[in-house]
Length: 291
Picture 1 (cartoon, rainbow, N blue to C red):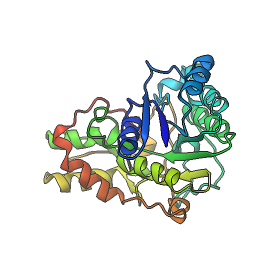
Picture 2: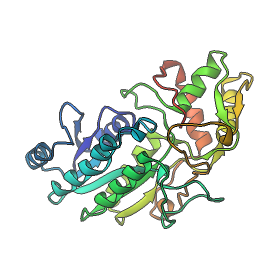
Picture 3: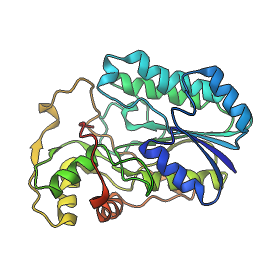
Picture 4: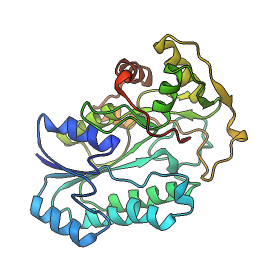
């Protein structure tokens, strides 16, 4: 297959390029190569490339900034998705969404048929993007969350997991929620699962694609400390005590049951974390935003 990967220099995009490169003709498209907010350029570039599949890893994911820059968030996370879909021709389309489409009031992992109820501008923009993506004749919409890890030749590590691991390794006390439940997800595993869906010609639709299991951020940090061989010195905070510009879902674990039924399995978050820490000495943290 010829696969165009949009947002190819990001954390997930680089992992996607790496996963595809061994077996397919992959065309990495970073922001300089394709401005997805320009519909005419999107049409022209995809018409020239004639890909069999387009994988959209581009996103406006500055969760707090989106509260004051809603137009920017919707321009990238929704309107640009519509432009990509309209320019597909006969190509399959993969689009990544987020757990932030839910309100976080559940008590068990969310399934694909649970009703979305986003509480933030970011979450709303991603939900509208899902709707536009679903207009593609062969669309795979994959919800991921709390992404970590990196491709061997990919972008530097960033995000909450990288910040936690870096702080523990350096003897600092990372700030973690005791009562926010997540399904931290390796970009390496998410990219492999995405390619598996395409190669299997799986039934198109909405899938949750996260590392297996769920945990609080405190439990995650304690496991990271154990794997690093250091004391779990943490600054523990409760969800109710932290005020952020954008609301977060408190319980945002996602179920992989539908993905598994399609023949694609994801390693547990513990396995993914152990693999990541094994390579963490090479990683540099570029963000410690609370997610």
